[in-house]
Amino acid sequence: MPGATTPLHRTLNTATQDANNAAARKTCDNVWVPYDGKLLNCDEYPFASTEEGAAKGDGNYSARLIDAGDNQAAGRWLNSNYTLNRILDGDALSIAITP
Image 1 (spheres, one colour):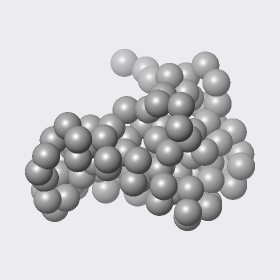
Image 2 (cartoon, rainbow, N blue to C red):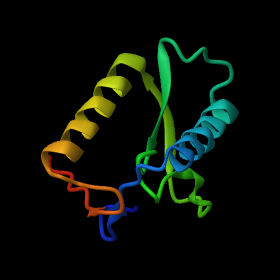
Image 3 (cartoon, rainbow, N blue to C red):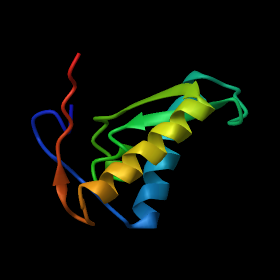
């Protein structure tokens, strides 16, 4: 999975971010029809804020419905970490999962 052994790359390009979101939502729409987007959001990995997001076209992503509040809190957390760690547009980052 991208980010584990190969880095992700942050993008500030809103067109890329929107395309990543749309590609992930298409997956959620195909699997969990219908959902209203208010109580549940389509969450994706790699993040929509990376070049490696769902719209990259290689099919190497995951998307799933999760609680809207949890998804939005995670997005705020991710953005604050970009800022705190000075991860700028185009910068590489890796994701480490620790139990």
